[in-house]
Image (cartoon, rainbow, N blue to C red):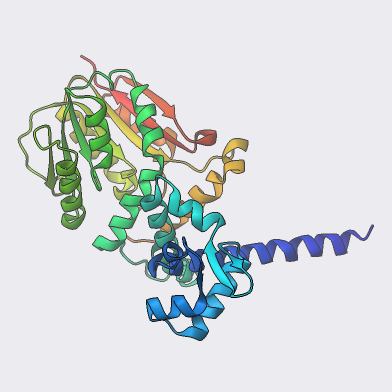
Length: 343
């Protein structure tokens, strides 16, 4: 057997799959943004789509061919060549997490794409830009909903978290974690803090839509400097936000959290991790979190995924007496690290 030919063929195939994945991402974004997939729930021809959506016929025809080649749409009436959505695109439309999945696609193109394009210059010492802007932050907040249900299940396994009556969610994003927690427990009251005013406005609307205004409120500001009189809390959450704080300030952050906890209060930090566990590799979590860590480090005001041992040490240093973990994604690629204030 010619092993050189076999290995060359394998790597050529791997490169084609890599390039195909890049193309599929952009085809998905275009189809979502222009609502072409939605239109193709019902079979339509290229001429019908071009007329209804006022699109350039030649580009649309080329997009349709490419989307068909990527199994995002299919021809269902060969004589008139009518197309219908299928495969990944149909699944995305019909998923109960469509909004979060769309945000993930948008983040890949709008957030991660530009960052990785700048990577060669940054690796040579070039300036790293700040991450910010409501659009970027909203996409990030929406995408985190993909793990929300499993995260809330893990949260319930943390000693003391289930019995909490007052909850503070730092960096609450769209407020969906806080909303989900309050809907599960009718006797819980909560406060969410969000630094981006535009994102906080969405969180407030979500609280209102869930009819939780009597039990929840959203404050705009930075937890480290925000002066608010809301008493003490039984549970304080930091969901996918630790990388917004520089490692040098984490003990100060944890100390401030501890000061807002009541006796036997719990502090739960949700952290994604680059895991080499087989389950994480098979599920794709290893590649996803490794790319996310690189994305974080490519910004001046974001920090890489934290080291678990360092988080444990920082919690212990400020006086959390009981510290543990609750994993909830394959191979432990996402988990809560929690500390309990006792005495």
